[in-house]
Length: 164
Ligand code: ADP
Image (cartoon, rainbow, N blue to C red; front, side, top):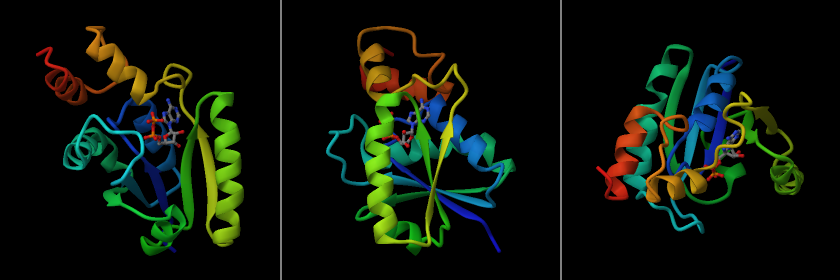
């Protein structure tokens, strides 16, 4: 059996916390489908095409370990997970603040599809606090984001906020 995971998110843009989670997930998966939400209520800074291109670049070094597919999606996560043949949904847990939301979401998702399990992974402590919204704010205000994103993402971020 090919072990397939679906990791959904906004990835606006993908950062080192996300790639840390991907690196952990590919230790026990043969294939990881990174689901990039097409419609997001978060008002993304990067267009869908940009988020896909940035993610493609950022996951490249991890492709030696497993197949990684970038998959823009809309609709219910559970439906898309099934469409792509995933047995598990991968989520990252940061602070306690994530727990309440993830707890409710997983409980609902279990009702929608009893065969697909959600697994939670924690990033390395250096990356646990990272969040795309704060990284964008720091870049906009001229702060150094080198520790939070790959070099490729950093260049795109600086170009986007007009600081390069
Ligand atoms: P963000 O909340 O940064 O906008 P996403 O919506 O793209 O990120 O999140 C996609 C998934 O990645 C979620 O499961 C989220 O909890 C997880 N994630 C985001 N940042 C981190 C991090 N620093 N460490 C672990 N997991 C994370």
